[in-house]
Length: 70
Image (cartoon, rainbow, N blue to C red):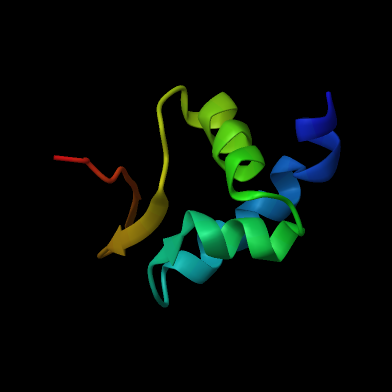
């Protein structure tokens, strides 16, 4: 429940709008909401049902980024 209270969807949508100007990584999302990197990653995983490390826009489409460790 804390994830929903500290990072409400209506405020996460503001991050989506910013993404159309420049890509946004998870650390910037965490700083925006004043939460830890792990907490922000957990909240975004609840929304998208997969790991999210950032957002980027291509044209008018918004996509998620996931870093792959090799």
